[in-house]
Length: 415
Image (cartoon, rainbow, N blue to C red; front, side, top):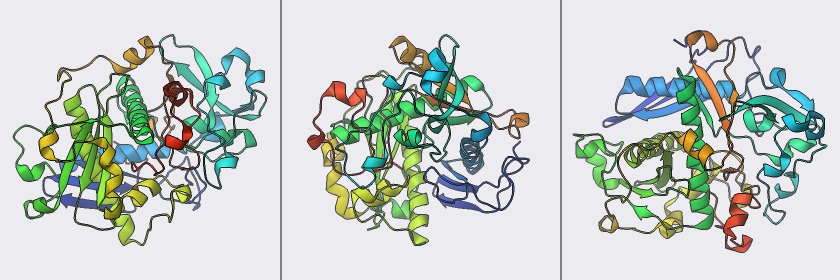
C-alpha cells in the first residue's frame, strides 16, 4: 500500500516473547529530493523512522510503517502550504494568540530566554486548519502543525513535536487518534509536573483475553522474574480514559521506561500504554547500545527522548514514588466503567475545548488512501521535551494554581 512512499533502507525487528517491536526507517521519495537528510524540530539531521509493538509481528510492522508516514508528513510541504503574515494581517481568520500556551520567564536553563510569546504583529508562518464542530477555516502557526524548526523570531514560542499527528485510512479515525494523543500528553504532563498520585490498576488489566503470563510483558518466560509492569489510571478532568505504564527491568542505564495512552475505554488505554512502554524500551536500549547517553542535568534535556534517557537509570526510581501504589497488592479494581466512552472529539467540543485539524497528507501518500491529520487543542497542556520550555505559564496550569517552585524538578520520562 505504501511501497511508493516508504522505501525502508534500514529496518529492525526485535521480538520479545509474544510481543514484537518493529522499527522501520523511511526513505523519502519525491517530496524531499537529494541526499540531504530531513531535520528534526531542533534542526538535527535524522532518518525518519517508525516503531510499534504488537503480539502480531505483521501488525507491528504495519503500525511502524504508519508511524513512519506520520513523521514523514510532519516534515513535508510545510513551506509550500504556509503563508507568512501576522495575526493582525490575517484578522479574524487567525487563531487568537491569547489562547496559546505560554512559557514562564522563570523556567530554568539556558534555552528559557529563547522561547518567547507570539505577538499579534509578529511575522510568522501560518497554515490552514479546520475547526472541528463548525468546520470554520482558521489559520494556525505552522510550527504547531509541522515538525519544522523556527524560521522567524516570533516562532520561538513553540517547541515543535509530533504530538497530535495520526495516520489512518479513515479521516475520522485519524482525527480521533490524533486527539487522543493530545489528551494523553496533557494527562501525562499534568501528572508529572504536579506529581499527582494515581490509582494503580491490577496486574494484567488490559492484557488480551487468554494471554499466557509471559505475554503480559514484552519478554520471554525466562526473563519474567526480572521485569515488572505497573499501570496507573491518570485520567484527567477531561474524563477520557488515560493510563500510564512503568516497565522496569534489570538494566542499570535503562531500568525503567514509561508508556502512556488514551483510549475510549480504560482497558484499551491500559493495553496500549503497555505496548508503548515495550516499544520505547526496545528503542532506548538500541540507542544506548549505539552510544547514546543521557544528558548530565535536566536543563540539558532537549531531544524528544532525553527525558526518558535521563530518568531511565535505576538510581532515578524513587522519583516515581509520588504515583503511589508501589506494591502490586496496592492495586484496586478500576472504578471507571469498562464500557466504551463517547466520541472523544465530540466530548471535548461539548466541554468547551476548540480542536483544530490540519490535513498533513502529502501528495505522494494520498493515492494509497492514507490520511494524515494533526490535531491542535490550545487549551490543553503540551508535553515539551525541552526542560527549559515546559509551558509553565499555560492557562491550564494557572487555573490549578501551583507555584513554580513546586513543579516537578525532573524531566518528564515519556519519549
